[in-house]
Image 1 (tube, rainbow, N blue to C red):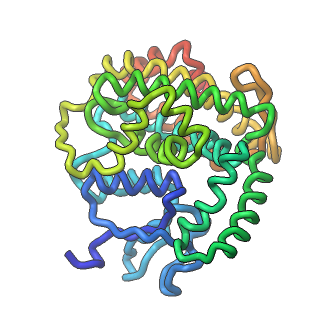
Image 2 (spheres, one colour):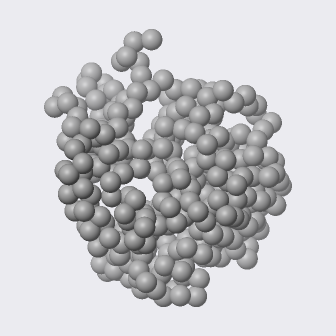
Amino acid sequence: MAETDRLEFIGSPGSPYSRKMLAALRYRQIPYKVRWSSHDSEPESYPQPKVKLFPTFYFPNADGGLDAVVDSTPIIRRLEREHTGRSIIPPDPELSFYNFLIEDFADEWLTKAMFHYRWYHEPDRVNAGPMLIFWRMTTTPADTAQELSDFITKRQFERLYVVGSNDVTATTIEESYQRLVDILDALLQKKGFVLGARPSSADFAIYGQLTQLGIVEPSSAAEMRRRSARLRAWIDVIEDLSGLIVSDDDWFTPQEARDALAPLLAEIGRVYAPFLLANAGAAMSGEKSFETIIDGRAWTQPTFPYQAKCLQVLRELHGSLPNETRAHVDATLQGTGCPAMFA
């Protein structure tokens, strides 16, 4: 195989979305090459993305050059169109909807727990700072690494407010994470993955965040070990599923999904739905920040237009469902707090 046939991307071991995509590519057996690099270190011939995020994929374009593309969720859908076999999107429209909702929850809410645990508690900050330096370049001299670590740690600690992490919301974030560990422990006992006996994009999104929460960050990793050895082991299993044998019968049936996913959907409605609604309302009003109540406690953070877009995409997907499918989805979501997103 020629090197040009391999899909290229850059990322970082400390980026949940880089780990999400790496595991997805391995499972789907799509040839790739990844560089643990930075945008500034890339060759001059490589384009810069509009927003410098990890991972950045370089897709060949019609002009013979490369396009720099970010955002893992649409990249996964693009790869579904361009590569056949071992799909991570369930073919059933009801399961596909649940998959997208759970993937979005992992990407946009669970990452709050990741960032919070990485920088809020002092032992986690002390651990994370040097890791970020050495993930980028393991040959960095110790004194240089310490200086850079101190700078990054201070900057990231001061930016906790961006994801809504503060002394008031810490309990909301940490209790949601703890509940999720318990929910996933019970869910995985059914068939091994979120939507059956084969992985979906929701699995890889959850996995990406848990590579940090369950392994890198000392406080959250200890919490996971205490609550679920099963989930901690699952992270290692998901890392490389290139040899997993799967069939079309491995997905949950819609009825199995409705029963199995009820606790997870309730957690999404409990914390993610009120966040999305408040953020979208602030974005629509042009407010730079917002305040709301999540799980009975005050929540405040800057407004994110991107996450307002996430809600819009979820609404469009819900509205595009066949009538009978949407009726089943609505019945399943009843009482979870999620219906408010689609009102």
